[in-house]
View 1 (cartoon, helix red, strand yellow):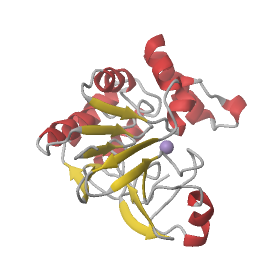
View 2 (tube, rainbow, N blue to C red):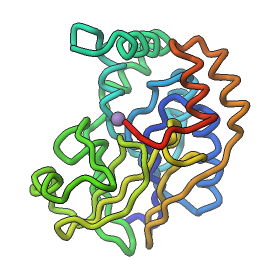
View 3 (cartoon, rainbow, N blue to C red):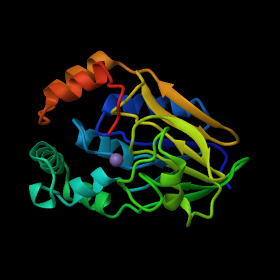
View 4 (cartoon, rainbow, N blue to C red):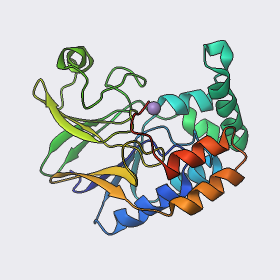
Length: 236
Ligand SMILES: [Mn+2]
């Protein structure tokens, strides 16, 4: 049984946002961390991977679609847009062999027994697919087939970058939001679980993050920088 879990999802290579969340998390008596996928895809992949692979204590990782794409160097051959393929290749080029191997070896989900909540299933997209989106307004009839095989009463997901906490067909579904590619929020979003569920938003130095992103060399650097300065209202 664990007591306080930080669900840190969709970091997307935003180093300062990650650090701000890790710092705030320490003040919340967290004993367990779940890093919920889409770790490196973004402007600062190497810094983010180094930081999270060095985390000590009870840390669990799950694989996001972008981790699969970076780790396996997905390109236009896999049907991706040229710009996405270019970012995948660039991110993979920034990482060491052991960091790439780490991404490729991530598991698809994690289950934790959390004090006050019980068994909680952590996935990236939906319980059946790392690219399937569950949004605040996704129709219940669309969600039903995604969750029918889930035994746990609570599911934590991410991927769509917007926080929510809703109940569908007697399952409580929590989206942890995005740490690094915020949508409809200004700060780095994450969730704190046990014994309640808190959707949190952590301020960080957006100006400095944008400056570092512009210097990072990532393809479409100015779009990434603009994203952290003026987060869009509609997610992926
Ligand atoms: Mn994703």
